[in-house]
Length: 183
Image 1 (cartoon, rainbow, N blue to C red):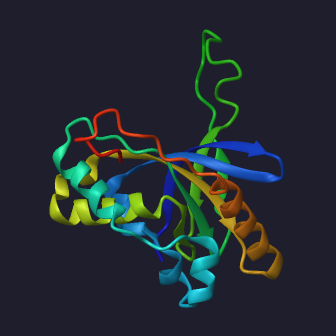
Image 2 (image 1 turned 180 degrees about the vertical axis):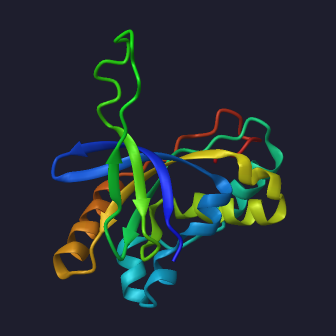
């Protein structure tokens, strides 16, 4: 089991505690999975993810070809254990950081956890495929929001509710130029 450390900001909303992290595409490609890879149960993966479409291929091409590439955050659920959050204090002799460092720290994973994309599976698939084809893309950064998922009846309901709330009313913007597809 490999211990993993990820710099993170701790955040709370409602009854959710979550962490905002920056990860390299290569880290995401190697460590974040699809729900069906974590738990081989078709019903399970369909309640916490939508099926993949050819949209992932379009995003992959965007990553491979655009120097202006940018992707929004992926929401990742931790399966098999809660990450341990360790707050970090920053040295601040002039008092300029007062209050700013209150939520900064490091997430530690002991290696027993698995991670799956709760939201952003098309981006995840595109990243995995693009990094495989062009490994230097692995150095790019992406924002990752980490939530804990617990394998209990209540944990499954909670994760499903979060997935449903995130994807309740998705809207696809219209492209500005019909010749340039929106990704």
